Length: 87
Image (tube, one colour):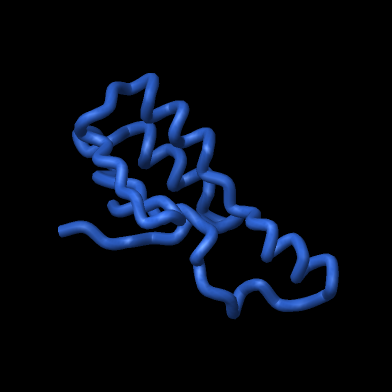
């Protein structure tokens, strides 16, 4: 059983750790869903590649930065620009 968990500023460290652990170590992750619709199967990449991927889990999108600059609320927006970790 896996569930999708969007990467946010509050859970980015936990999600990066799960990606680094991969599917074979608890707590880990099975996949990373990319903003463009792609999916990375963590069981098919090695530890060094998982660490590199974990370092790219960026939670700030241009849209979120613009909303913050304008005083808007980014929390009500979709996660279209964010990566999603499937744990």
